Length: 250
Image: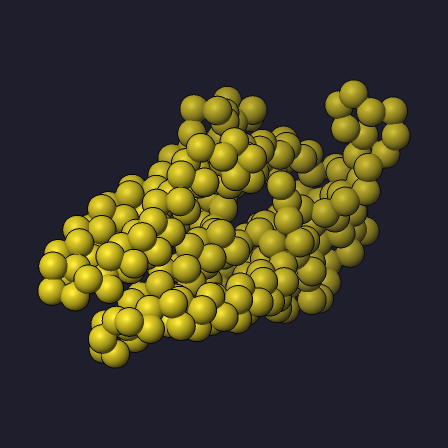
């Protein structure tokens, strides 16, 4: 009925089940599928720790000239804050497809290879800078060990840690038939349409009651909800309420 620009392509790991049916609605979006309050709290906590680390670094650099001493600590803090932000506020990619059979949601999160490339080049550039400055002020040799060395260790821990890669990589394909939904809600606190469902999952012998958050683009959640409503079973509640996005969907 209406379509948004599809700026994301499905990865090869994910395929539409009802691709043989006409698409009623489909779009892709990048969203944070977790509790942003908790993520903001984690970022604040790590920012405070980084301030402490920067002060320790400042005391270690006592022999360095004041301007470069301050600049090195500010650079270190900014870098660590950037790395922390990339871990606590990473966005997940979503693709939605509505058909006569139901709703399909593909969600995926690729490992941020760009961050590794950035850290590798940054470590090399800063090492060259500190070595060059050490020809003027020998105290910069200590900075070359702590600054670029710390960046290099961060790069190695991210690049070769299997658990870290798994934490930042996921591929999920969710399929729900219209008859399974038991409540439709328009979120008042986020750009989300929330659908509660009750179904027996494949391989289970019990009924699962849960919900699916459909992340919408700005000012589209009302239109999405109105399209969904006619496909639901008679008597399914349609409400507006505050929606609690889970701590994590991993």
